[in-house]
Image 1: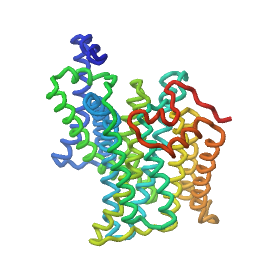
Image 2: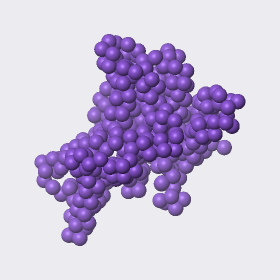
Image 3: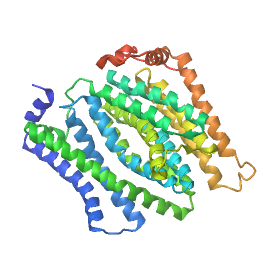
Image 4: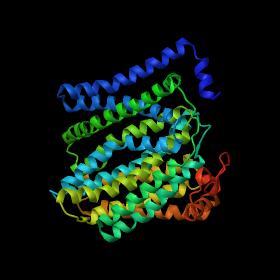
Length: 444
C-alpha cells in the first residue's frame, strides 16, 4: 500500500475535517476576488491590491495541492511543469499585451522587454534565494542546501541551451521570428522530455490526503477542477493586482518603466513564489526549486519566443522587434544571471552561500538602477550611471560563473556533463555525476 494511502487511512475524522477546513478557507480567499470581478465592484487601488492579492494567495495554495495530486497519475516533472505554466500565466498575459501594443506604439517595445527581463531576474535573484533562506530558517540553521533530484537535469539542460542562445539576441539587436522558432522548439523538446519521465508516488500532505481518498474518476475530476479554478483566479487577479499597485506607486512618482519592470512582474510572479515556498515549508525543498526552475525554463523560452509573434500579429506582418541600447543591456544582464544560475545548480545542489550571492548581486544591481531615480540631483553629473552599472553587473555574473567552474569540481563536472548530455530518461541527474546525498565542494 502506498505511504500516502496508509496515512490517509490512519487519519481520523478530526484530521479529515481539518483538511476540509483548509481547502474551504483557501477556496474562499480565491472566490472572493472572482465574485468582486463578476459583480463589477470597483475598489480604490489599495483595496483592490489587497483583495486581488488575497485571491492570488488562496489560489496558490490550491495550485500546489493540485500539482501534488496530479503526480499520482502523470510524471512528477510534467506535473511540476504544468504547475509552472499555470502559475506564470499572468506574466504571459501582461507581457504579450505589452508586445501587442508595441506593434501600435513603439514606446511599448521597451515596456515588453522590461517586463520580461524583470520577471526572469526576479525568479533567480529573489525566488531561488528565498527558497534556501526559508529552508535555513525552517530548520533553525541546520539545513543550508537544497539537493535537486535527478529529473531536474532536464530543466537544467534546456535552461542552459536557452541561455546560450539568448546571448545572441543582444548581438543581433532584435527579437525576431528566428528567435521564436528556436526558443519555441526548445520548449517543445523540453515538454516532450518531461512527459517521458516515470510516474512517482508523491508525499501527500494536508488536503491532498483527503482528496486522494476519492474514487479515481472523482479524484481526477477534482484535480482538474483545482487547476482550472486556481488558474482562472490567478489570471483574473494578476492584471488588476499589478495595475492597482502601479496606481498606488504613482503617488510616490516612481518612473513608469521601473514599475513595469519590477512591480508588475512581482505581482504576477507571486503565485509561483508562494507555491515554491509552500513546498519548502512542507519538507519538499527539491520540488520547490523544481517549480521555479521549470518556471525559468518556461519564461526564458516560451515567453521570450512569443513576444516577436505577438508584435508581428499586431502589425499584421512578420517583423522583428527592434531593441535599443537599454533593452540590449537588460537582455545581456538577464542572460548572464541565468548562466550563473545554471552553473550553480550544475552540482545538483543549491547552498545558502549560492542564494546569498545571487540575492546580493540582484539587490545591489537593482539599487544602482533605483538610486538615480530617487536622487536625480546627486547623479546629474553621471547620466549613464545605471546603464554602465548594468554592464558591470552582467560581467560580474560571468566572472562568478567562471570562478565556480574553476574552483568547484562538482560544478565543473556537472556543467560539462550538461554540455555533452543526451536525454536518456529518468537517470539524467546521474549522468552528470549527481549523488542525492553527497556533499559539494565549497568555494573558498
